[in-house]
Amino acid sequence: MASVKLTDVKKIYQGNVVAVHDFNLDIKDKEFIVFVGPSGCGKSTTLRMIAGLEEISEGTIEIDGVVVNDLQPKDRYISMVFQNYALYPHLTVFENMAFPLRLLRPRMPNAEIYKRVTQAAEVLGITQYLTRKPKALSGGQRQRVAIGRAMVKDCKVFLMDEPLSNLDAKLRNQMRAEIILLRKKIDTTFIYVTHDQTEAMTLGDRIVIMKDGFIMQVGSPTEVFDHPNNLFVAEFIGAPKMNIVKSQLLKEGDKYYVNPFGSKIEVGGAKGKQLLAKNVETQDILLGFRPEHVRLEQNPSASNFKVTLEVNEMMGSELHLHVVAEDGSKLIVRIPTIQLNDKEREEMVYGKELYLSFEGKVMHFFNPETEISLLSNQESPQKSDLKQDVPEE
Image (cartoon, rainbow, N blue to C red; front, side):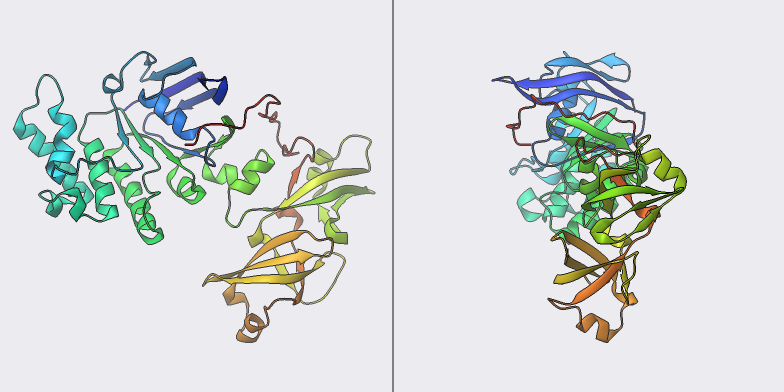
């Protein structure tokens, strides 16, 4: 078990293409950290630099207090699970799991290899498959074998590079739960890469959200969901994504309001005072609110607004309503089906007019120029000279 520290780490490819910019992060012993972001954001490149599979252009990486920049992967005491499993098709499950142990020098006794492989197989529930070849296994079983091969080594850090991306949705959910249980059993430091924000939210103690090689925010799942630092994080975390609309912040007497779509929604006095620039009565903002925080209203009022339904996605326990406001803004509304009777559900068809509202306490506020949260002290990580042709993850 070990801590991991990245200080001013940068990766520059040929042609001066910067894939990772000044990456700084302290990972605690036994912490589960998730790197998440869209393809090409630098998350897998960062993981591969930690593993020693990519050279570092600048900065330092420490594992358990030791700088590992110049150490080979085998000397870093890490184990890694790859996206494509990387199993040897001609070897049995047992031999695939035993392979890294047979490479050790001095040679590990066969009895110890047998003990480690069978113990890992028991933890992962694949004991009955030890004599099979990979081609005789399902995708989920192959992934367990790949995880088992990483488990058998004495490692300080467990690295996982999008290990569930090749699985179907049902199996992905099952394996996600098994990784949570595995973490409790082996109790080591995990660094996990994914583009799936659901995996990030359910697995991580902390999430590192990346875009274009920059860290956009680091925090617990609750922190990044409830208090996004910027517009990118606000829209990336949450499904469906947060609605973002143009609005104004107004001061009338000692009260503060926003006015999306001609409505008038009160903002708490303390928050409004914090948001509105000094000696200003009106300020343009980007207003964010999540689909699950929107309510259906029966009648028009000053605090709600009218929309027209375009698409109704039936998701089982909830409806995802794609609507258009009177100014042309496209929004998504998430309504639990239990809140509607059968007739109301049947009436949710194209062209239906609805009245919506949301409360001031669920709103998020962003600067329309910098896209930074007006409630955050963060400075924008974006650089004007940032190259966009970052290598694919």
